Image (cartoon, rainbow, N blue to C red; front, top):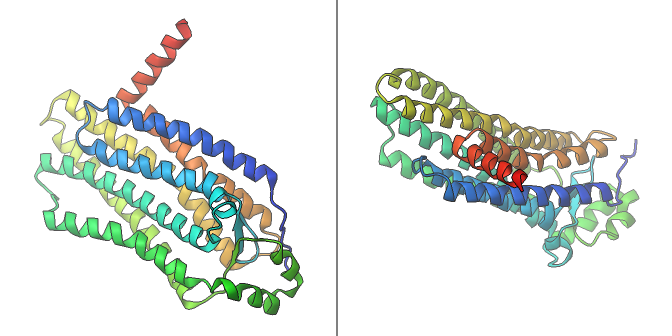
Length: 315
């Protein structure tokens, strides 16, 4: 059976990405402002939150405006309709590689937020305190892994000049349709691509395990320090952990659709073009929901927003 591939650009998806990109950009800027100006009662943990929010903003702009990826499911192929692809003519394969690097960095930064808050509570309990060597190792690992994933992905694709030959040999019925696309990428399953998917799955599971272990340990330590610190300090630690947990669960809006998209692409299931586009549409929701969760689970941010809204209603 011949695979059904839709080569027409889905107008609804382009408009949707632009709308979500605009909404997330405004929300992310507002969240960055709150972190910078309204974090007097939050320790230097706010710098990790700030870095996380900046990476979220950059990834959203890249995904919704600069790239606008369009999958060509069930083939391992796609093209971009954003500024970088249509105006600067940057190859879609490089754009996908850089976007993957941004996604990995975003999840890593959330892990660092968990670790930083865990260490703040750990110092109060004098247990499970990481040495400086572990911080150096973790920083080097956090910097190198996204770069490694991006480089591995960039080398997993075939040369751009070989794409049409591959299509002519394997998908001759789509040769003319691919010729009409000025900037696309198509992948052939190879060892490097399989290795990349394996590393991605292992990395995702590792991050999930780290989240669970840190959260469990933080909750145990919170019970132990409840009588050692003031009610205000305990409440502040408790709120920070709750906010991080909410952000962790929010991250499923990014990781689950991304994982399902990879599974869908690898399986090359028939008539999956609609599902692939829906998964692409779900991914930008993460940043919007994450910004709202951060604001409304952090009292200083929430109180500022509510005061601002109330003052505007008076006028």
